[in-house]
Length: 451
Picture 1 (tube, rainbow, N blue to C red):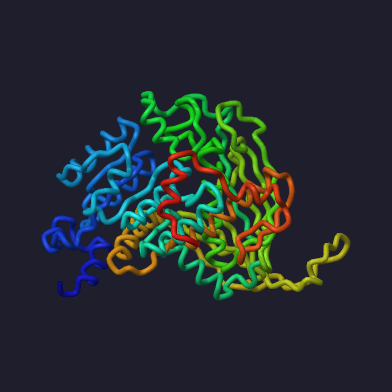
Picture 2 (spheres, one colour):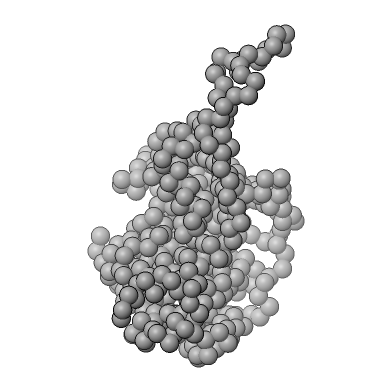
């Protein structure tokens, strides 16, 4: 096809309508995609993939019947096609005509479904956090390599133009030497969640599929359908949920992994269901800089949430809506000594140490989600590594898990990134892995490459 890549680029920029694009693309140009999980983010992904003119939504997998029906209906409404519905993702993987799958399930399913998808010859777009525990990440990396699959992780900020620009400026020294990074997320959900989101019960068969490799418990509406995130069996709380987005950007910009992690937190005020902390403070030591993460579920604060890089020339604040650089004034240190009885020395209008800059008006779906989908589809075709490849997703998840591990053991942990091991702490090391429940332990072992 003449200049197909140029046409793809123009289409992704919105130059051509979907109808015009479909008239040019043949069936062999379409990427047939199956979707696993049609919750909040799963529905968002379904809509964003359907908006791409070279996507055919071939199948929907969801154990919660109302969402399964909704997903199938959305596909028919948006594309005029009938997607096949599944409750067991393995039957979806049996379809040889499906090229890729989107995994938007609770966190405890991300790794096994990704590995099994790779073994079935499917490329994977998997939501963050990539893993429930550290060891899963290496399994996913090795599976993607062994089966030659493209795996895109849902840290969509990596596809945002403002994030890419800021990474370049940080690496280029625009704010000087970065020695401190601050990440925060604040909201107030006092007294906590008290009502389930799902209104219908799951059958015993569907509940067992929802649990998958996690510990067997009696069906509880409060533990699934959105609220899974507050239970350790299925998630790492806000450390793996919210922290993962911005620590991913920090580690990308700084090309670094932590060597020491200290963390404090607990469930102090929230009385609703759940186990994960409502307040958490974590400090990461990296080579040459410190990263602090502050999280609160019981006070929204005036700051909300942000990512701030503090350098020797100024500060860069980066958010989904844009970024701003705040230069520090060029005032000698000796002139900054407090003086209460004599005039302050130094220039009346000191020069900034770097250039101020501000860009805003970015939108999360338009400027991060959609480009991330487009990047994945282009990589499915080109076989190039995507913006959020499986190795970077693994490294991001490691940092988040270490925050939880340090909090759980109540002491600082030391991390050897080359060996991917915690140094000299047997109790903390035990938390790097969890056992899968049968039969999923056997299913995973059957397809994992020998490493």
